[in-house]
Image (tube, rainbow, N blue to C red; front, side, top):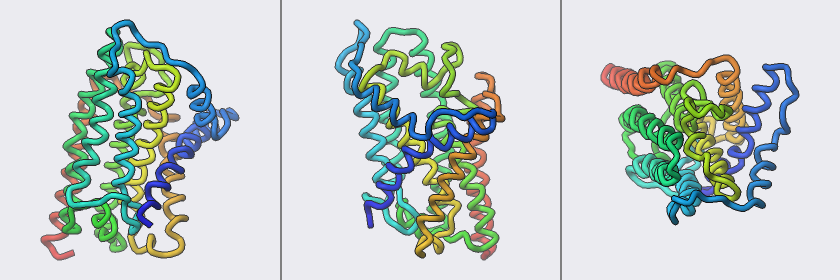
Length: 305
């Protein structure tokens, strides 16, 4: 049972990107690419060779593999409702945060090695975004730890019961917070756009301009896994724990993850990217959302709700 969440993340990682692509295509009146086209593209990349800058060292060669390994390691820490994560212990969400940060750090260092000013600019923006959303993440998890009295992902989400109306309000705040964190962590609108190729406005894409072949495939797959991980965190906050104990648990989480892909597709179809100067304000509000959730939880607990 402890491998169910990990397998779920891997399967949904392949599908969520397809749901996003199909949603965008439908809303723009196009047929769009095939559902599993991203997987086919990665297959092509795996059969290609890599090209490295003359200023690159061994770090650039190992960074994509480390990035993928960090995403897989983080996936082992995330539960699926009452189904525990493959690895769980008190404070595991701290390891989760810094596993993802370590993978991002290796990409930043590899980008700086290329000697490209555009990649250096993208790296600086990526690090700034990560720094600004970190308080929001820990406030959201701190709120869940406060409500449940536990310090591990598995026990937190297994004990978080939002079937009551008052706790449902908190659940919606947490789900909204995790959704926004997912958009930032995966370089999506409104802070970044994975489809852009304008160097002055790229963030994540600017970091991987010099990657090709297997290295680029590893980074793409790691991105899918991160996208699935953050979606599962939002689903864990929104789907009532009692429902996950029944035979419908897979159905509930399937619906939640499909809705997650559709919502991202809607955002990318109808929302424009923020001005770069406005991103810091937007990212700071994510910490405010976490603080709001913490305040709501504290009020509900002290008033005996």
